[in-house]
Length: 481
Image 1: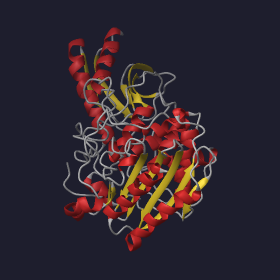
Image 2: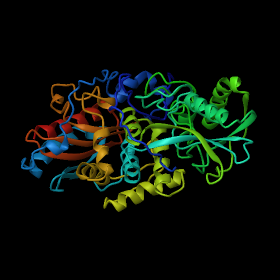
Image 3: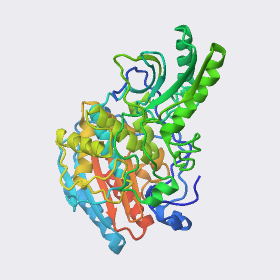
Image 4: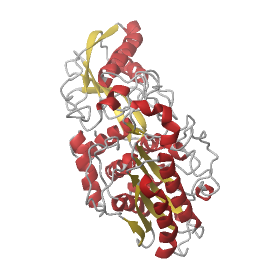
C-alpha cells in the first residue's frame, strides 16, 4: 500500500466490501480525489473520517424501489429548501454547494441551487460511465478472454476481450476479482491442442486491438500515474491492473509497466506448465499483434469474467478509477465506437442524450472523475439517478450498485452521527472527493416512503470534514421529510 496520496484521491473503502451473488449467465461482449502526496499527514482532516467500518452483509439496505408506496406524499419545495439552504449557508467561505433534489415519481424539481452551473464532480462522474455501460450492455453478459490457433497451426493468439480482473492462476467462481483465470485458460488451451494432435513450439501473440489510442490519459496529473492511482489502460490485465492480487480495493501498489505484456507472460508460463507432458512448448511473441482473423483462425479455449453488472458494482463499491476507465472503453466498444479515451467520452454523451438527459455544461476528460478538468451540472447528475430509478431497461440496475449509507463501500463509515443516522440503510449514493471537492449523488426515501434523487456537490472546499458533514446532514434532512 502506498503511503503517499495522489493529486486525485478518494476515501479509503473497507477491506470487507461485498458484492451481490453471482448472476449465472453466458454471453460475451463484443468487444482518488485530488490530494498532493504531502497531504498524507492530514488525511483524516481532508477526508473527514477515519477508516470506514467493515462492510457487513447484514447491513440494512434500502427497500426495493418497486415496494415503495405509490401514494406516499410528495414533500413540498419549502420543506426541502429550508434545511438544505441553512446547511449550505453554514459552509460559509469553506466551500460552495451546488445542489438539485428531484421527486422521482413526479419528476418535479424540489430544490435547485446553482444546479445548472458546471462543477467538478470528482468520482460522481462514474455514474455517467456506468449509465453508458448499462445503456449498451446486457448486465448479465460476461467479457471473454480467448485463445485462437492460427489457420496454419503455427501460432496462438491471446485475444483480449475487456476483462482486466483476470487471475494469474485458476478461475475463481463466485468472485468478481479473479473470476476468470489465465491458468484455467492455459489448461483448456493445452487440452484442446493435445486432442487435435498439435505438438512442438508455438509462439503466443497478444491481440489487444479492442482498445485504441493512448493508454495513459494526458488529463491525469503525472503524480497520479507515478504513484499508481492511475495507470495505462489495457483491454486485458491481471488483478485489476496489478502485478499481484491487491490487498484491498484501494491498493495502488504493484502497477504493471505494461498490463498486456504481463498477462501474456502469465499465460505463456501457464501454457508451458500444462503443455510439457503433451509435447508442447510455448514462447512469448508480439504484444501488439494484428486483430485476430476470427473467420479463419480457430478458437480453442476461453474463460469468462464476472458479469458486467458485478464488475460495475465492484467499481462503484470501491470507487475504482482504473476499472471505471476499462468499463468506459468497454461501453464504447459495445456502442460501436472506438475503445479509446475519446470513444468512451463520446459514448457517455450520446447515452445521456438518447435517454433525454441534458448534457449542457458537460466537459468530460476521463471515465473515472480522476481528472480535475471534468465538469458536469447537478442537473445532469440528479437526472441520471432519477432516470435509473424509473427505468425499465438495464440502466435500472445502476441504482442497486450504489453504496448503502452506513453499510457498504465508500459509505460504510458515513451517517454515523446522531444528526445523520436516520439515513443509514435508506440512502444510497456515489461519493466523490478531490482536494477542493466533495460530492454525493444518489437517492433516499423519506419517512413517508417517497423516493428522492439528489446531487450535492461542494467545490472550492477549504475544510473537507465540514463539507462531508454538510453533505451527510443534507441527505439526512431529506430522509426525515
